[in-house]
Image (tube, rainbow, N blue to C red; front, side):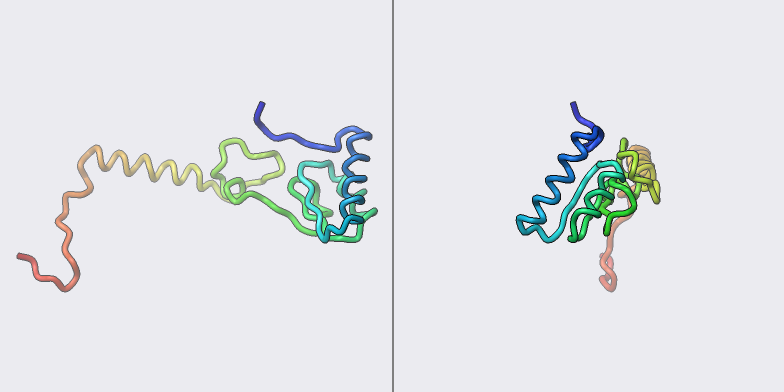
Length: 122
């Protein structure tokens, strides 16, 4: 159906996510990554494992955070809730493209003869 999903929202799902994290550490993982789990689930993983935990929309307690660049700079139409924008480049890029199309349609670009620096013009 598209869109963003989450895990660990029910007590059973939360316990399954934590159990999987513990099992992965026991199996030899040296780092874990969790995405879109409640902060409480991330906290449980942190309490029950000793390896770094990286989060994507999993709360502030994780050892590190991942955020998609396009979400950060405002180039995504519908970013996930946890992706607070730091810029609005999407609209700036769109405006620049619209300006270019307008200038081309008004024949205000491409009319100058290009010459190389230092070259003599015939």
